[in-house]
Length: 242
Image 1: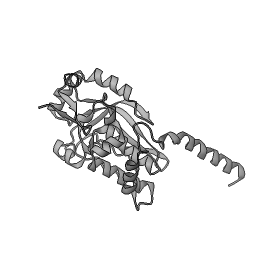
Image 2: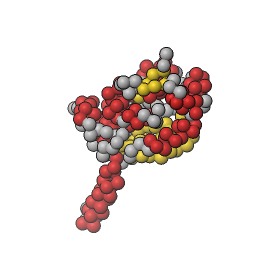
Image 3: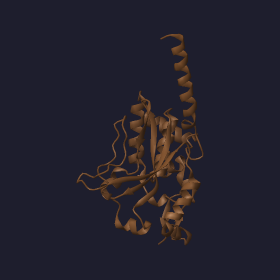
Image 4: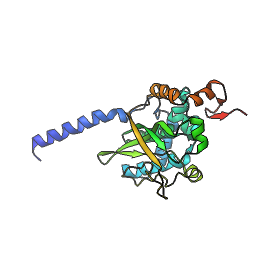
């Protein structure tokens, strides 16, 4: 390699690293600057040598050890979206689980961010559709890791128990290299996940934007919160009043 080629390679390296720095830093929501969050990430990745191995281990831990709980999806309660709270609580929803997963990745040196989209989940129950008044999940979130010179999509939403109980099959599986998102069709050939609008990639969570759209698109859910039918409890999770 001649000198000019070496210089160009170095320039490219520093350009990439400069752009990626924001995907390696702690933020208000990606708060792996908290010691117990970092330590858990290190524990999960311990003994693994490659970034792909670490990414795979982190994905499966968040997918299955953090149980799915859609009732924590209330934008007015900021703590519900922080990685540290989700880890301590051991449950969360698509956005909060993805924030935790991306925080773990950053903690072990893998550039990571969150990608927000609008998704039609054709498998959700009629009870949820009646409650949300739609089957469109606005601002559904999944993680993206930078692996092998490309961004890889990772959806850790449904733990194994939730996936089986809710019929969200096939489950999202990750081989350490390729995108792992909801399948377009289930195992019977019926529609499953349909991505209908891209809301962009983010180094930190744009909660103010999410909150605005949430209350616009889910007025019935908002009225439940406003009327006190859903209230926060001490451990920051949410429950229905009896």
